Length: 76
Image (cartoon, rainbow, N blue to C red):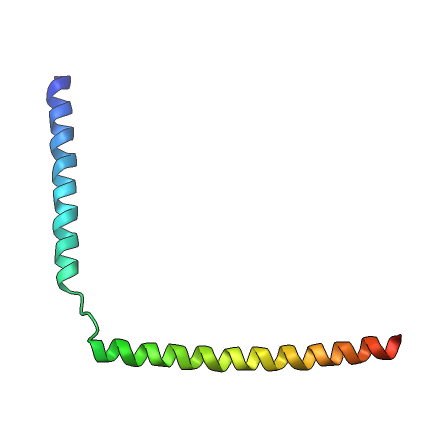
């Protein structure tokens, strides 16, 4: 009896794994990949945004650094 139960459990596990991979394959067919032009445009947007934030952070860092130097020189 336990041999039958073990075989039954193995069959259930195998069928579950097979169903999982069938579902994965079906979901992959639903994926729409971006075109090269879309990738180029979004990459440009990311780099421009990054450059803007780099400039803003550099500006804040410079202003606060200068202010801190001025305060420390004044306290000497």
